[in-house]
Amino acid sequence: MAQYRRIRVDVYGRFEVEVIRRHGAWTAYRRGADGKRGLMSELAPWPEVTSLEAILEDLEATFHELAGPDHELKVVDLQVG
Image (cartoon, rainbow, N blue to C red):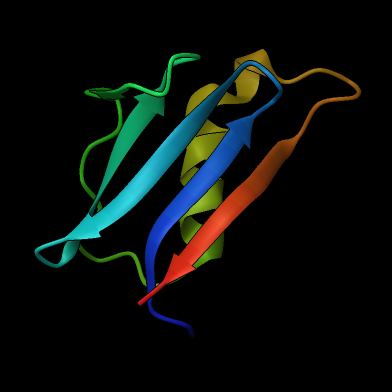
């Protein structure tokens, strides 16, 4: 698997989540329309996650109630490093 450092995900067209790997764990932030980020306390850091698919599955499990017939989770940006 590629070593991702940052993943940005559009959550069902409602908002974006930026997931960043620091110190061996992933932490999620909600991105505002103004570009500012806020820590998402409902998503605990993921120290053991090793795949993009696992992160997307967790986001889907957390925010599935926001889904609609024409909306899905979309990876907007991936940063490798």
